[in-house]
Image (tube, rainbow, N blue to C red):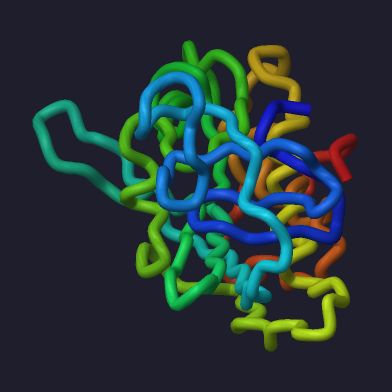
Length: 228
């Protein structure tokens, strides 16, 4: 598992990352909450997290979709009739909001790779992404970037110290994102595995009761066999 992604269910929360109570180290790009001992004050570095107790967090997860647009040779773009999905999470902690995006895409050719060539093309492999990601995809896949087909709403903070299922789900989504086999699985735009396969995989792994995209739109790769 990658450093910074913790599978334990019981945790502290911080802007930018989530932290297990049982852990001994944290990962953050926010020096206010994680004082870095190496790599510079604003670098991605490790440090012991502040001592317990920590105010409880309120968490939210949503999943969204948008049509994938294909660039035209003479400029502009056209709709592909195929839809791309992604996950957003948000954690409220000490009156701060910490948004995160979980996504996937090909290692080359852009998110639309293969859609304008019958599903073939030099697209490379399908990798899991989190904020930030290549090609500015996180900008497109923002909290307001498309219709939401599933939204948990914010949880009520558990002041008694018990686990919050939605916050726990975010930890599991992070773990699934980190455990995806990078640079090993060939990308297939029209059949999967593709970005929709990665998103569905993360939702299944979250153990949350999620909804699938509406049946009225085409979401290739959502149910690619062998990943769920």
